[in-house]
Amino acid sequence: MPIRLGVVIDDESLLRAAKRGDPVDAVVLRSTFLNPPRAAAARRIAERIHEIHPGAELIPYAWHYLTHEPGDGIVVGSNRSLEESARSYGHLRGDARDHVWSITKLCAEAMGAKHVVVRTPPSFSPGSLSRRRFTTFVESLGDDDPKLLWEPEGLWTTAQAAFFAIELDVEIVAPAFAMTGQLLEFAGANWLRISGSKDARLRSSHAEILADALIEVADELEEDEALTLLFDGPRAYVNLRAFARALATA
Image (cartoon, rainbow, N blue to C red; front, side):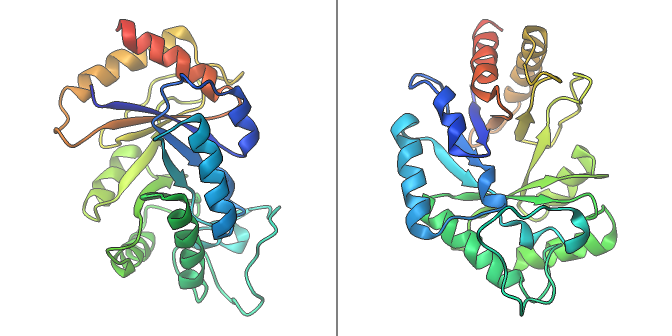
């Protein structure tokens, strides 16, 4: 069955909860959103993760200066920042765009990553201006650039984002559940983020509902397609194991 499991980590401390037998196919590093490591440090991070999860795909987030403007409320607790000469950045444009992307690309290459998550803020709305900026940025990428996984926030619906992104050969990352625990519509998204309930725990009933829904979706996928579930939050590993059990009995 073409269903892969992964975890999203904000820092390496979450790896303490990992077990070598965990069925982890992907590790997404959100720490690079604020602080992309330099190449040597990125290689060391990749080595430490692969000691626990051999063969797992590593996927960094793009540096926030690529997507978030000064008014988007990002608190930079980072030891890396833009040079003062960078007058404009964010929303996939500005005079800092190419420099920011080059930093993200170097980090991805050092980790051996084939994908990068691009997270856009709510201010990057579903209007024509945002669509044009996204299209222009994608068209500027070369064959040696990592492929984009787009995580839109704000007013974009999953269906709306997927319909737009498919024309650009970009895949989207969408939430599987609402804050209330309701299973969301995720048609068009092959990457799903699962954060758990208010206590960050994935209820067994929710795991079973999701497993049943994904089995139906997976049966309709092409041979080269897969669904990737990314478990997020402090209980990511616990929730991943709970879902793996539910999937095995579905």
